[in-house]
Image 1 (tube, rainbow, N blue to C red):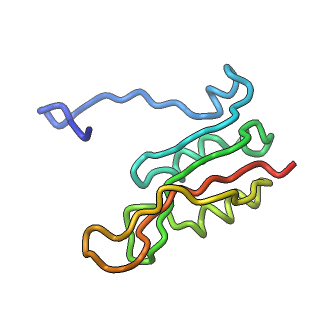
Image 2: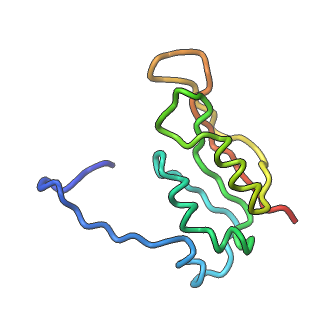
Image 3: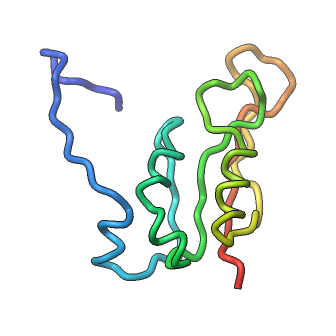
Length: 115
């Protein structure tokens, strides 16, 4: 993980969820865990979200205002609600491990399409 070509340059092919949505049609469950870039992935899933072709989506959300590594839960919640999704549950709750402070650092919320 996190290995880069010794030259410092590495070619990476990028696609979008919407591109693959044209191939698969519908996704029952999607888990996004891109180390703080989950919202960027969602930008590439706009068509599938608006058409409600993803039933449930799990993301990695920051819960503590001092966590600059993850997208805040509130950002995800408003984004999904605007597209007809509801918060279903929280999974994998992780405490602050960098500073040992007693607060929730991140969690993996699941959002489901409103039927």
